[in-house]
Image 1 (cartoon, rainbow, N blue to C red):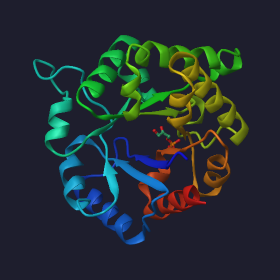
Image 2: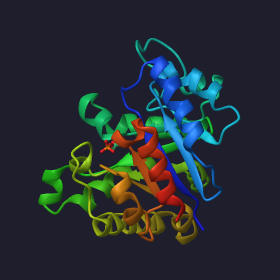
Image 3: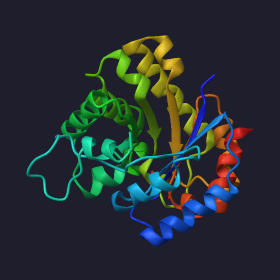
Image 4: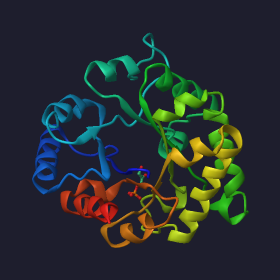
Length: 252
Ligand code: 13P
């Protein structure tokens, strides 16, 4: 049995004060359950406060990105060690917005994934094709190379702390979700890709999340698919009631 994960990627949203408000709302609403792990990823500056507010509450705090170096002349960047020092040991890597707007390359992501492994951080690794790639029938090839390029240099034991998030770019923030069958088809493909490289046990154990316009109204159906182990939620994670409803959908 794979425990489902519902993770909220807040992206560049919420001031410090708004972060406090949203976390307090979540603490009031959420009814923790052993069958679902809940994660939120606020912007860097609000991480220490989030960690403090969630010390005694079962919502984990993640970062949205990190650099691959330990320290040095990388203006504007944040290292794994800095995150760990404030109690954050989960990081989202390879989000399509980082790839598209900040030019994150396969080589950078390979280094970041390696750093997450070296530092024993949980790596929520995002993959997903663009609309043009799907229309050209290349979506499986694209996702397979994203995984192979960044993750296949890692040893099997690294995958204890890897979660894959399949986020088709055309479904992010567009209101257009992949159908539950499209999600299932790609999740199954990802599991098979990992099985070929690392074996069936690993493939059966790894969690694969779906992301892209998940809302309270469609979450239950998407999460009911056998290879969908929860969701990475953008817009709907910014409203406590919506996020709570999505967590509830993962319990059933
Ligand atoms: P939306 O849920 O807003 O489509 O965003 C998905 C996402 O990018 C989560 O990382």
